[in-house]
Image (cartoon, rainbow, N blue to C red; front, side):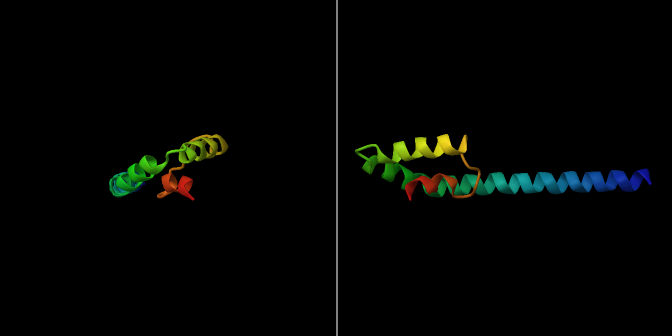
Length: 76
């Protein structure tokens, strides 16, 4: 019985690590893809509207969203 438990734990750990690796890789790709868009938006924001929206949004949530496009929510 101990062997089955160990096998399940190893499998579960491996799957959890693989999911974490995939999420990190995907977040990096998304960040690289959206970085130029965010730089252009910040450069065009002469009046500081985006910065105020980011601060207001952060104060509501408490911290940044880990959702896939969470950083783009301040643009709408």
